[in-house]
Length: 209
Image (cartoon, rainbow, N blue to C red; front, top):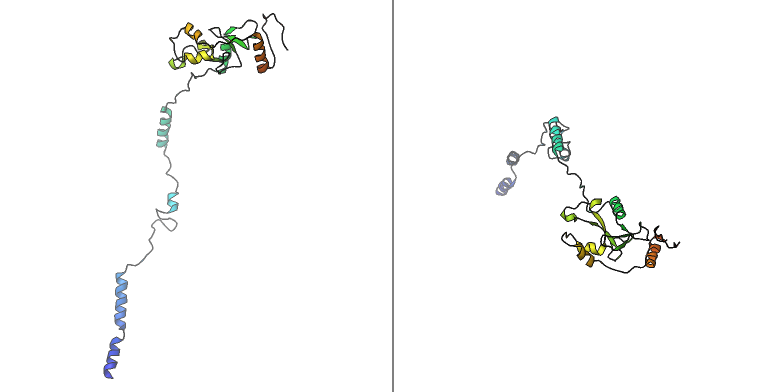
């Protein structure tokens, strides 16, 4: 009986031992403390969202002067003064200086330098009565889009000419697209394009209204 009581006493936990273990455990584990912000209670950590959205530093007067100097020294290239296509006013005057067709309205019919008859409404198409506004000196070789460098030329000839300057007038005439157009054909073209027929003052014929 005495032996069993002794074993029971040995099995009971030692309160002092437990207290010592708790003290040792508390001493070994670090305490969790909230970081102290030296800037005050309203300030936030540097990595917070509010710090990332903070206003950028103010620009000093010296920085503004530097930026102003950079803009003043920046060279802006001027707009091109020589467009590839002729302006509308140049085309109008270019048409006016082309040779007139006898008996036809000069606002509607002209001849190019090779003698080909062209119709004003037919521009840019490949037919025999179609025309282009051609650079006498090709644009790719420095020719300007001015009235002095403009001529009304049959579209077929203009396309075969390209940017060549060594091609002769005789060769251009041979490359012209020829078609026989009667006065009645011209009247029909005017009726379809303008709705009426207008002859020149020297036509001597009657007018179709």
